[in-house]
Image (cartoon, rainbow, N blue to C red; front, side, top):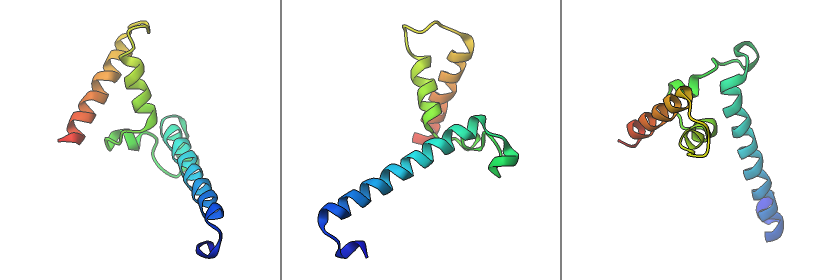
Length: 91
């Protein structure tokens, strides 16, 4: 069992588990926007419809508010949507 291992090994195992979990979640977040429902076994876009703030949403929000980026109506619309989701989830 890991509890009986030296502290350094416990720390390394914890780090591997944490990083593996983060990697899994990042892939899952991206596939929610660009995957195929039949292959994923779930509907594409469910996270967004459920109001989950995932990394792609955060990046769209940040890029939508970047004054150095060229302005576009789609980007502005995405930023407004993310703000609405953030406000709704915070309340």
